[in-house]
Structures are given as C-alpha cells and as structure tokens.
Amino acid sequence: MKRTLFTRFILCLALVVATLAPFTFLVPKPVVIVAETELVVVEVEVPVVEPVKVIEPPLHQVDLPDFAAIYDIPTKKRQFFAFIRPAIDAKNTELAQDRSKLEYWHEQISLGLGLTDEEQISLQVLIKAYRINKEASTLQQINDLLMRVDIIPTSLVLVQAANESAWGTSRFARIGLNFFGIWCYRTGCGMVPGGRNTGAKHEVAAFQSVDAAVSGYFNNINKHNAYHIFRTIRAELRAQDQPLDAEILATGLLPYSERGADYVLDITDMLRHNQSYFVEPSGQQTALAD
Image (cartoon, rainbow, N blue to C red; front, side, top):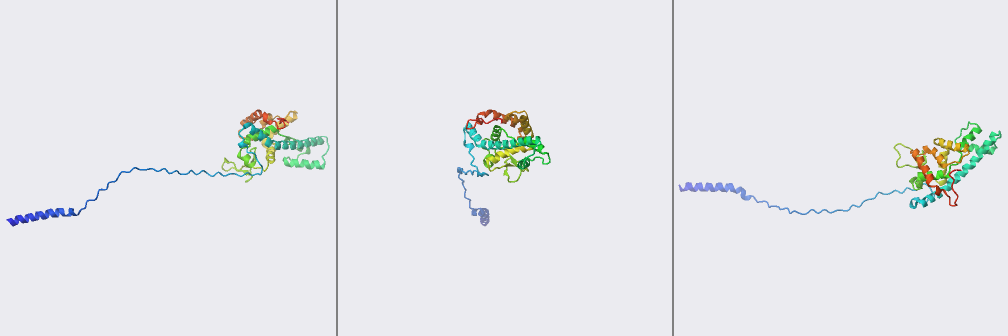
C-alpha cells in the first residue's frame, strides 16, 4: 500500500518535472526601451547658381555711346539726335544732289537735247541702283527716278530711329547699329530676333557704320514697293510746290510696322513733342520739311 502511494507520488512528481522542464531553459529576452529623442532639422543653405549671362559682342567697331546710362531724358534725346543726325544730313545732301541732276536731265530730254556720255553713265548707275525698267524710254526712266530719288525730312528719320531703337538702347542698335528695325533674309546677315517664329528665316540686319545704317533706311523707303504710297505723297507735294511736311509723309508709313495706324500715330505724336530737340547745336532748326 505504501509502495503504491510512493509510486504514485513519484509519477506525479515526474509529470510535474516533465511539464515544467522545457520552460526552465527559456531565457527571457531583455526589454529594449527606446528613448524618445527630439528630431533636429538642420537647414543647409544651398547656394543659388545664377545663370551665366552671355555678353553678345558688337558686330561693328563703332564707339557707340551708352544711351542706357543717360537717365536724364532731355539729355538722352539731345545726345541721341546729335549722334545720328550727321549721317541723315549727309544722305539727304547726296539725294538732293542726285535729284538736281535728274531734274536737269529731265529738262534736257524734254527740250529734245541729248545727254553727254558722262551723264549717260551716271544715269545708268541710278537706274541700276533703283531698279528702274531698262526697257523704258529715257524720259520715263528719269520720271521714275524722280519718284524715288528724293530726301526724307530729317525730323521724320530722327523720330523713327528713336522709336525703333528705344533711343539707341535696343539690342539691335547696340550690337548691329540697326536703329530702324530693318530685316534681312540671308543667313548670318544680322541678328536672330529672340521671338522669331518657328520656321521664319529673317534676321535683323547688322551694319558696320552709322552711315550704312542710315543708307539702309533710305534705300528701304525710296526703293521698296511697300512704300509706294509714301513716295506718291512726296511726289504730290512736290507737284503742288508744297514743303515736304513730316507729319503728312508719316501717313505713308502704314506698312512700316505691324501696328499700322497706331504706329503712324506714335510717329506723328513724337514729331509734335520733340520739336525743341530738332534744334541743332548751332541753334538752327532741323527742318520738318525741305
């Protein structure tokens, strides 16, 4: 009886040991406590890299005044007009001399008198320069030349130069001496406009001298078909023995700008508001008409 009780005790003890034994080898994992730390944001100043400005070199050797640096408006106007006026006056003088020859030749032909060999050569030079019909009669050729070979009032040229070049401060004026917004159509003939439409081929012409720039303007007005009305108005004023009034002639400049009538109004307004600046340093008034 005692053995039975002892045996049961041993069995129960063995059962308890067997039950607890697997857990006696388990080592509890240490509890990891994560300390709450403050997040520090460090602002790193990243240097701003300014875009490199490409300085566009001038396409000429002219010592052009820095008109943009002249902040006094009256001073800027006087200096700009004084800078460009000599070239305008020189071109008008050349045209007036050629016109005098044409008027004399016209009279000679009308009287049935011929031209000398030298006069014929001079006439042929003008016919070629102004693209006059070579098949026309000599009298007709001279009449056609008289429509084209004529002066343009200095004041009108001055205000157009000021308007088109922003008083000599535009990129095209500084880089290419283009004071009149004249275009050209041969690759490399000038400066590519920044806002040129895709597929467009035109450039803004570049000139090597102020005289060349002014001549380019006169050639444009006196030769291009777009300014036939301008030349017709001028010829009509001549026929009526009237002065070449700049404001009247400005009405023939509608094709000069896409702005059309608004452009003409701007030019006539500039003519009226810059009268005092047309006075040359000598004190003589620059004529609005010849």
